[in-house]
Length: 150
Image (cartoon, rainbow, N blue to C red; front, side):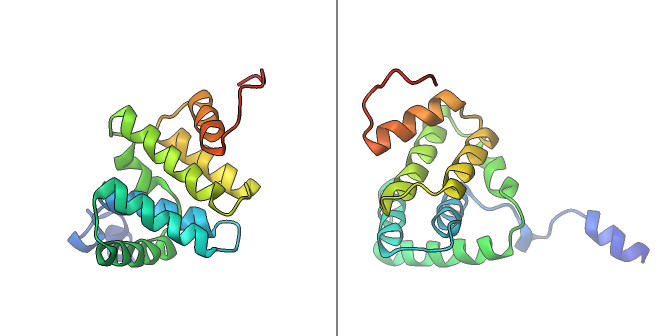
């Protein structure tokens, strides 16, 4: 029993190393598309386009990255392993990640409450304020200023 507990608290093995930023972003986007229970072709296309543009990937690279992200998402129990590294990125990169998340949310024309909640949680974990997150949502959705409090 002591060995089992020791293994639980041991240093991570090479195969269990934290994912890099590229895989972290991909995994968050894959999870976001699935959080409402339905992944549409439009959401899949949006994820592929976001990853292709952000990381300058080929179509095959995107397919491999999404496959690995899907596997990691299925194995994960929370967002921390993906957001920990992202929280150390420059603010401009972190803002872009939230913008990309909103692109996936609005890809199917619907903003499900679970999607909204996930973007909020990730934004908090990577140090993006409520105001910044809300402004990015409005910008991505194409809202005009309406005087609503942020």
